[in-house]
Image (cartoon, rainbow, N blue to C red):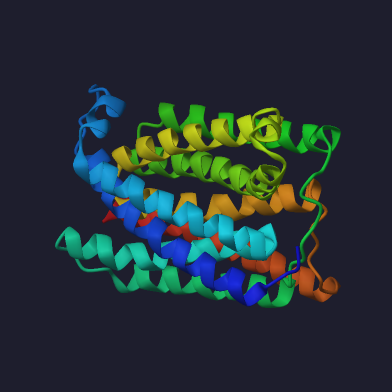
Length: 281
């Protein structure tokens, strides 16, 4: 399919807005569930949480459209802008002001994102990579998700728990995004091909587990403690799969790669800073 980067960017920005609305609704629902109470049971009986699910479905539909028009390396980083949409909305609903430090962090994320897109200039790759190309990157990514999950569940500090569980959730969302383009293409060949593909079931498993871990992260603390980690981990995980499995490339020179790497470091550091700022507020 031909690339349509402008359409991909528009769909990705709209997806980020939907995801932001969903995150605010779901975090408010999850945060109201006390520790020791069944999280799943409490959420499925909460209309606000279901409103967030509707937002997620809309966001995912737009994300699928964006991935059909552009590369994973182009689409996924744009979803970081969900943080910029979510922060003022969450603050307004909670009767709080967004601090200057928080806005500065969100601005730094946005600038780093723009640098990644403009300097890196990501290309599309090979969506139907064979299983043997997936094995090592998949093992590495799942290992990191498992480590973050275990550390997050065992963390005594709520902000740290939200950060680690959010990172695990976002990484699974990134994996799901990398699988989405291939799975949606399978529908052209019939439902049998869809159900017979390991990518379909990996996508379902990553999505369901990611949603659960995200709700656990939302339960642990305010949105600014968890959403930065989710929004940063997702494009990084997707970029990792895009580069190592799908043969996507950053069309830039050595200097451009260095600038892109600095942008990624800034994105990660800012996510951690936002979480720590919330922990001390």
